[in-house]
Length: 417
Image (cartoon, rainbow, N blue to C red; front, top):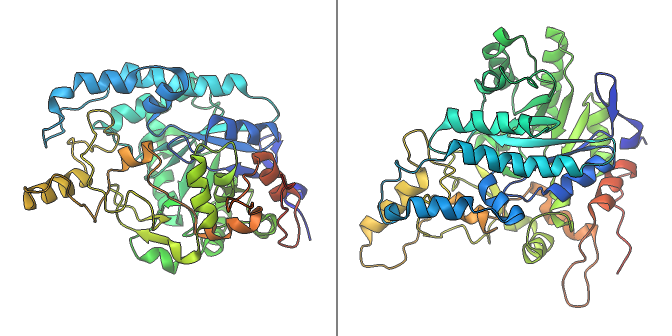
């Protein structure tokens, strides 16, 4: 049987190990994790989700503190429409995070940044334009457009001098989504450099309807996209993502025509991953029954997570004055509506319970929203359980090389500590 290392992902004349680590926010796909992928000849993602908070943690800046101070008077107000992002400061945070990562890069691989359209930030067009162009300013190798259709995102970068130099790609879950994207951007004469097709077993937000994700299959969608590429004579590398747990899984997609694979779940329990160690243990210990898909995300997308995640049922007060990344163009958010409804219904309670939505900003910032891939329950088979009941954490290099060189659905265990 072939190994992943028998294939190469090609961008023009350049070749890479066809392994891409997905962009998990908030700083779950850390710079350290992405740098390891690049060092080993593959592609790593960082995420720009809540980049001002990420900058504060990494560089001792005060973006969140200063924003909170500016809007402190509005904390008890149910109306959050006045809370705005300072675009210059947003760009500064983006350049800090990405620039430091790019300066540290070694090896022959690439580093991309994952930019979610659903981070609407009470100014969807302006804030996305700022994030995209600041990423290009900072020298990022590529930008993956995610969590949205991104019909106008290419146009937001079209005037940047690196618009045709940097690798630009988009995540889709259907042929139709890609067709619309290409049609909307045809006048720019700029095709995506890669397309990631994400199936229904992926972690976090899913690009399907609340229930119909169960009716789809990654291989089927990928083959439909490959047929569309052939019909339209499009030479665009297609990256398969979602539920690829072993190197042999990856080979099956590569042999079927994928140019590469995007993987993430197995890297959540590496030392380089940004999740706190205690949360990594929750991932290790999860059973298949512990993994659910629900509709509590205020984005409107279904979201896969551990059912024990503290974000479910939390009635935390919206923290928009500090964060506010999911405020829509009118300064509203589905969680704010649900929270205000419960406060009005239970004025006697000091702490309300909100079951239908969650404050994604605050919970993701505090690592209390445990999103995960479908095969998270298999993570316990990738390591050793120690005498104290905890599982041994892995290195990103170990997981990467296991994908790269394994055969026959074998998973290489780490050297036991």
